[in-house]
Image 1 (tube, one colour):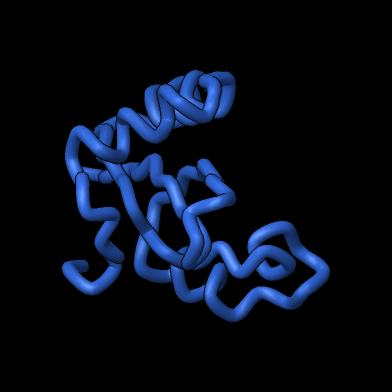
Image 2 (image 1 turned 90 degrees about the vertical axis):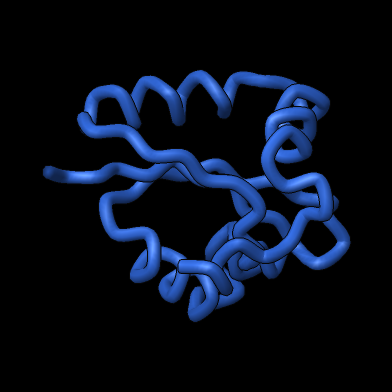
Length: 94
């Protein structure tokens, strides 16, 4: 069974939120951490995984990513707080 991830990253001050999706979360996080300053996540040092969810089907992950990206900041923060109120870096648990 394939697993697809939708995730939210932030920077150390929690001022920037980045929503993405991937099939290989560990690899994608490594890529974000090694990004150059020319990319969005590299420029703003957005490397802290604060939220993720899984889905079985790629189409569902695409739909969910698009949905969350359209949300305002308060809704995204509420989503993060619902599962990770301390905003811990969840990449340590993967």
